[in-house]
Every structure is written in structure tokens, then in C-alpha cells.
Length: 216
Image 1 (cartoon, rainbow, N blue to C red):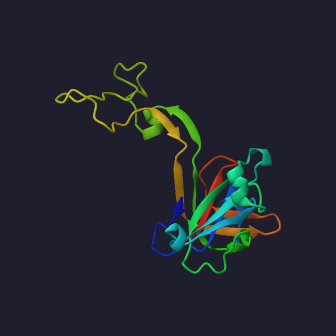
Image 2: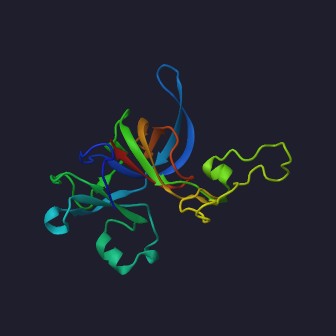
Image 3: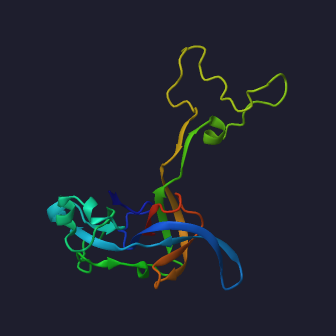
């Protein structure tokens, strides 16, 4: 999937795929504490450069993560070549001038600088089947006037005239495991030796979730 900048039509120049670790505190030069999330970056390698002439659009495909060689299919082995055994691939939009991008190039945390503004996308935590109070922030019924076990019930869902339930009515159901994008986060610190980024704020997903970091 090609990812485009949500806020403008500018081509994306900075991108990275990392693995969410945990949240911590970061103290700036003034002593202010910021909630931040640590992201570790597995090997990210360019596996294919796509062009309008051949593929119909300009993009760069990268492989990320590590997978056992026995779990790599034969077509994937031919595509990846000697560059590695990746857990998956992603595509990012690139400018038409891709002369500085070549297959086999490693993309590291040095791509970003401190104070860069980024958008982070990932799959949110799965919460299973949840009721309307948690899923849709319903207030529930009153705790008085004869109610006994209906504090968290959804209430009436029908319509008197049509005598049916309208599509889209908010009910209980599966919650989480959605693709979530958090915009305008700031890179607080970079640890090039350990391939780690510290990003201000909370990021989607549980620990170990792969997230896409895109420069604004």
C-alpha cells in the first residue's frame, strides 16, 4: 500500500518502520517531563524501486523485520535476493527523482532528526467484544427509579414507524484492531547505536506492534 502525506500533496521523503516497545518519561533541557514512547528499528532495507514507466507510479518498497528462512516462500526469496529474510514489506510514495535510492540500501534512525514532526500509523490493541458503554461511550441507565441490572444496557434500538433497526445503529461488538494514525508527533531523541527512537506521546498498538513513521 502506498502511503501519502495526509495533510498535503507533497511527496514523503522520510519514512521508517519500527517496533513499539514501551512508554517512558523524557526530560528536556528546561526540566519539563514529556510522556514518550520508545521505538526500536529492525533492519529496514530497500527491496524494490517502482517507477511510473514500469509500475505506473513512483514508490519505494522496503522490507522490515526478520523471519526464519524456512518460512520464506520461493518467490519471496527471489525478490529479496541476498538482502535478507524479512517479516513483511511496505511501500512509501517517493519523488520522481529516486537516484539516491537503490535496492539494498539500509534505512536507519539517522533518517530523522530531533524535533522532526512525524505521523505514526499502526494497528490498535484488540479489546474483543465490548458493550456500548466502553465501545461508544454510552452513559448507561440511571442508578435509581426501579432499575436493577440495566445500568450498562444499550436501551431501545428499534423505530416505531419503520419497525426495523437502522443500519449503522451503535451496538456492542468487536473493538480494537483498527488501523490508527496519530498525527503531528515530535521526535524527542535518537539513539543511533541501539537503533531506537523516542517519540513524544502515545502510539497505537501493544508492545511489539510494527508501526510506520512518516515525516510530515
